[in-house]
Image (cartoon, rainbow over all chains, first blue to last red; front, side, top):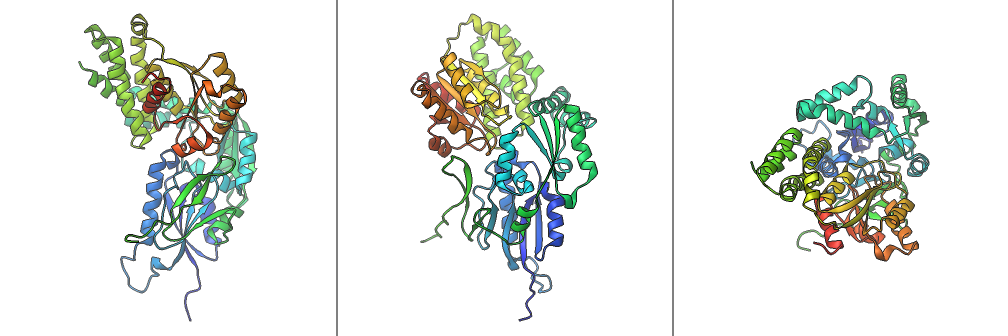
Length: 264
Length: 211
């Protein structure tokens, strides 16, 4: 009796969701305690896996100051991942004490579009799409306009003058394969300067430009405890997230059998 | 000047140094093949493995590859003179829907270094193009690369397309890329998976019986 009724979730999420997830957290009936992980680590899946696991471990660690005033981490009901497969980075993540909730989708684009299926349709229709969202605009550098020389300077500082220009050029060249710039717009957090930025990119590269309305439903359900088998995997404590192959040879998030405890 | 110095300069992405060091070794009488294998490729081997282990980042791979290209430019005419025999023909590409080619280019570089003739189909390659290129060039190996979990399923289509055309028995299929695993390779019926560029080249040699 008298127990604080607010449900608390630990959310470990990519910074790419900063605006969208912050908006959902503010509106949620639950307390969403968000740990942000640097955007872009999908390119180095073992680093991303380690970063996620470190946050899981921190969330499960006992409170360092059990002063009985602040609520201890033991009160989390679950740990929720704000990641998709992300180059398999989530494979191997494990919890000891809390359930772990994992979205069943490829990456942030599916989450922002609101479903795995919608992303598949978009992807199959136009694979040459470079996707933008507030996080992709604010958390990463894109080689357009003045930022090209900034990118070259940053590269030069680390890899030497001889390589700075070359690497900046490479970043631009990698974009040659794309033909569409798509801005995923959530009306709740839309900012005109984001759309303008994506339009500038499209113009500079001669790409088609499209504004696609995102859908907050999927992320909202995931971070608010409305989990269903189709959209989310719920790992029990002690289980490990695994990635397998389904009947269509598509890789999917699967639950691994819990490892047997020592001595069993 | 040593072969190790070439390898180290390559790993640091110092193209000018690599060029100078390679030239010095050649002027000093070291055979071009030895400079290639024990200098350039030894360095790239380290780069590929460290990249796979996420110990180094994409830019470091790109500048190492650039340094390797600079070294090879000097060696190329000499290697022709030394008449290195071809180990076979490899058709390589990034699968349909996938526009990433850094890993594929590394594999291509290492296979070329091992003496394979390479037909590079680029990125976003449909299964049918792998098939027609394999037929046209009488390929020994088809190599499929994918970076995305959304596109890796296309590899199964490549296997199926080669099977349907009746050429599967004559061609080995290799797969690779960040999300690919041995388990995935087995599940789609490909012949070999390689974790990094250097081991891909080694695997290719063993597939054609030249290891």
